[in-house]
Image 1: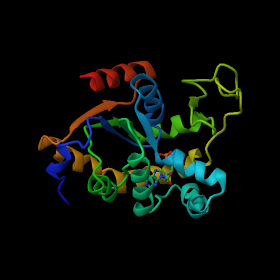
Image 2: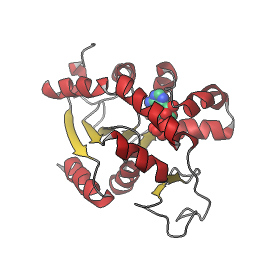
Image 3: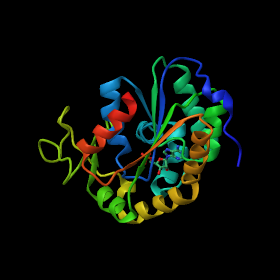
Image 4: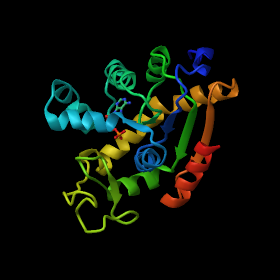
Length: 228
Ligand code: AMP
């Protein structure tokens, strides 16, 4: 495995960049939304960016549509380019939600000069992942996330802010969720080792949080880690 360079320790700018790691359905997007509102981070959700491209019918959208519906990963070079373009144009700290998803993507961020200060890993057993994603609904326009049982919208079926319909993502159906879980195990879990080693070398902070708790309890833990 390639080694996490010491150069990462010296951020180009004094902004905090945080990676949220964890299986689909662990609540990364929900916590990211809250943390961005509270701390002013910019949320970098490659999943949202890809879904927007699909909805807008761009060339990128056409290229990735079948990959997303199968629950597979979009090629690393496409993702790295997307993220670096966004970060380059940005003037705040970032919250990386769903990216990097492979060691190659982590290396792409490193080589692109994106310093990472903190990695927050959310853990959740597979059975809970399947249950949670089955009840998840999203507002396509904003990416706002709801859950039929745990975080229902104020009025059934519609987004709290815009009143527009909320929908189930096609890749939240059970067979695709199982495929995404095995992709997570095979391609993304090596990042745990990658960043834990970086943490052991003092290059990044690594904190693990159980996602098997309610939103507010997890939010409190996340907040205290970020403020620490
Ligand atoms: P998410 O919303 O993060 O669960 O992402 C939804 C889907 O978009 C994934 O199942 C992948 O098909 C694709 N995707 C999102 N982020 C990445 C990434 N960093 N690398 C590769 N594929 C991604």
